[in-house]
Image (cartoon, rainbow over all chains, first blue to last red; front, side, top):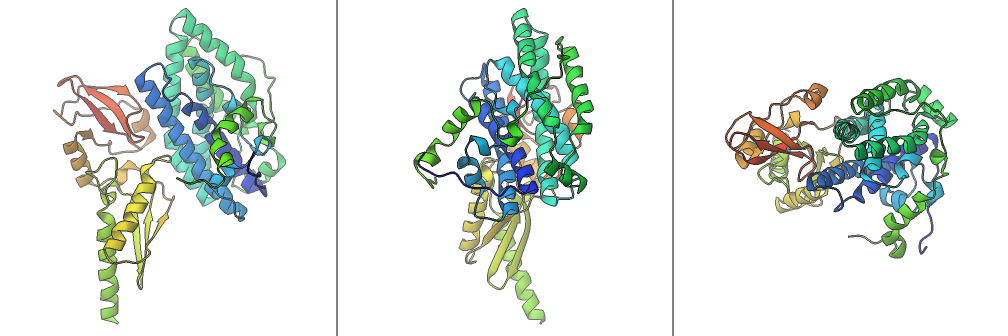
Length: 258
Length: 167
């Protein structure tokens, strides 16, 4: 690594904003890996478009995190010059694309959450977060519809597509609990009316999932053992490989600009 | 006093006209004023500051638009103009002018439906073909050639067309 990692002063607001930004960037990067490889042209455009929305959301959030931190970090430094342990995203979004079913199930779990989460954040007392949420919730509504339609098509499709969709649900289920977990710093922001309390959203999230799963003839797992760690920087082995690709240009040519 | 105010108003109008002439690089029939992206122009002395609102979070046209505004203002005689991005209130397709909608249709893109409510996002959509006007159309792909467009097809005249998504 040619360039040193930056240091980030993670006040509760900075950390809260970074967590949302990292979710969007990492999932956006994962989807961008499909560019040129999707099963049909329309789907290639759809996944790339969704990636673009997510990376756009990440940029707004990184910009705000840098401003809230008040040092000389900016959106590029936050994205390119933090190492694995400094990333705060959900384990779910860093999971590899796998087959098409696994990508779509990951997208469905996240979009169903993001859709209600951004809508709730529009009421934040923090006007910048509320404004970013107002823009993001319209985009996530499209993302959710896209993923839901695919899940129904795969689940209620052939034996092969059904089996793959069900396997993806079973595999990714343990990464969904982290979306609703809250630590002490975030709890204080929730009390201050700045952050969203995700706990009460879980019922509606589950309802969306079970409605779509029912139509898709798929079954949601009953087990509730959940894997956590991403929010505190303890990631699966996949994130380091993803970052090595995402950050390679800035690490090789520090300060490179277009 | 009156003359100073008049001069300020005239300068502001000149700056507004210059900024408003900038077009969307991906849909060059629409100016940023048609789109509702141009929010405010403030002039203080020789200094001018323009406020714009991003359309879609990841829209790559926004950087280009900001640069084009600076160039247009410099051509109009303003030195070191500044472009500021405002996030609130969030942009919606409802801000697109009626003139902008007509220009879009004439260009071959179906304009966004009038309401950006969630019902419009999920309810039954009746998008009229910009070529023949028929409402006998179908969605081909929710995501099109740019982040603001979806791909549709007319079942009457058989032509595919872009639809500017309701946001």
